[in-house]
Image (cartoon, rainbow, N blue to C red):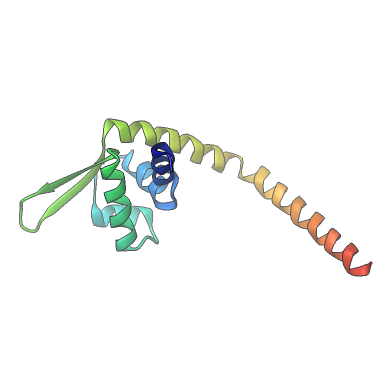
Length: 120
C-alpha cells in the first residue's frame, strides 16, 4: 500500500476526522476529548491519537504532575489536515438534504424494480 493512502485512511477514518475537527478548537485532555467526540471507546480514541501522533498530526504533551496531565493538540501539519477535513465535513452537512433526497429516490426506484421483478 502506498504511504499516502495509509495517511489518508488515518485522516479520514471515523474517529480521525472527529479528533482533527475537535482539536481545531483548542488543546484537550484525553477525557475532555472523549466527551467532546462522544461514543468513542477509550481504546479506539487511544489508538487514533497514537496513529495521528505517529503521522505527525497530533502532539501529545505529558506533564509530570500529580495527577498526571496529558494534553493533545494539533501540529502545524495536523492543522492543515484538519482544515481540509473540516471543509469536507461542512460540505456534507450543508448538502445533507440533497443526499437524503437522492437516497429516497434510489430506494424508491429499487423498490419499484423489486416489485416489477416479483410480478414477472
